[in-house]
Structures are given as structure tokens and as C-alpha cells.
Length: 109
Image (cartoon, rainbow, N blue to C red; front, side, top):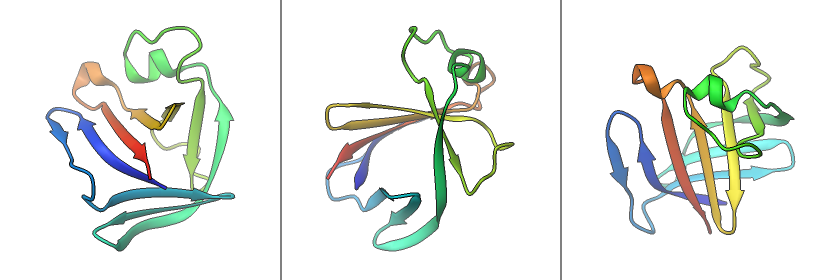
């Protein structure tokens, strides 16, 4: 289970511990909650994808963000990449160069 700490898109927001914005993954199932209420749930899969730099319009170091998460078998959705480092989960998607990118940083609970 992971709780949101930072969100960056056109604006940047920081969230304190206990804010209730949770994402959890169990087997091939995911669940997103806000304040205890499920706002989205379903199945996911992870695939290797080396196109994070071109998909996000960011200069990403080789070997970073090499895995893509696909929610609900929707492979045509905007690509969503993730990286786990220690107790942090960072998810990036969209092209930052056209104000459509977002970065979400979660902390393990």
C-alpha cells in the first residue's frame, strides 16, 4: 500500500502523512482510494517498455522508468511508467513539454 506525498503537473502539491490518497497492488489487482473511498479499481499488468523519455518528453537516464503499468488491459491509454526506490513509488505519464505530464510520488505504508 502506498500513500501519495507529491504530485507534479502544471501545479505542484505536497500531501502530509495520513492524507488518505492510497494506491495498492495485490496480485494483478489495484485499488485507488481517497479518504477511505474507492475511486478506481481493477486489474493491472506490468510490461517492460523503454520509451519513457519519448513518451514523457523528459530526459530520463538510461535504466530508469523501464517498466510500464497497464490498467484494466487498456494498452492504448497514455503510457504510465513507474520506478520504485527504497520506500518510494514514482509514477510518470503524459508529455511534460505540452503541459500534459504528471509525476506522482508515493510512500510505502
